[in-house]
Length: 264
Image 1: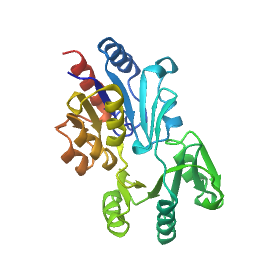
Image 2: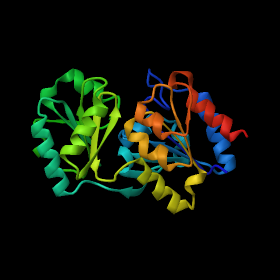
Image 3: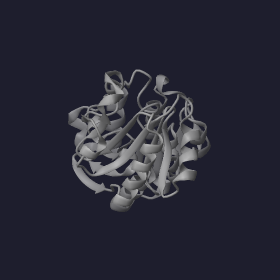
């Protein structure tokens, strides 16, 4: 029996145009409500950005595992926050210094932050993932609880860079958030942490969870859920972690599979 469905966003729920089939979403939410199934958006993206993707009338029916598991909410009710401590932040500043030529982003509770020197094009690109974005001259200006630090890479190089960084800095977690970005967060922090918290809170077993993903930051979630699906365009590590493979996000494969599972 399915009691929880969790989906990643970019490359999974959202197609290459950052859109999805709203009619199918409404059908999914109707069936989920009738059957008592919790619908979870599990993403490395900012919570405020995720909110903009869904109609407001469904907010109370939505659960969020944002910032790769560090920020968990039911609608607007905060269920859990896990931010980086000072020792972890000190390590991140070391990484920032070592890779100073790479564009970076800090993700916090109140906003995401990036540097002015990266230029307007990069900042505009970030608004695809962050609804709240603050541009600063230096990260020392930031006064916020920080979840995550992201480093941009060349396209197709993120998985390799994540492995390299993990070897150098084993006290933090590094995952390929996309094919061109590495997400750095607290050791052991991932989307599975958020699913585990929801499972404990609402008495849902792993075997009663279904997860969908495509990136390195989905691996732990795909391995944790009793049933998991990777999209056709998923990174190799996500495909290895999933129980099943489905079509691409451009084919609405996740929405179709959810409707299939809820209609059985």
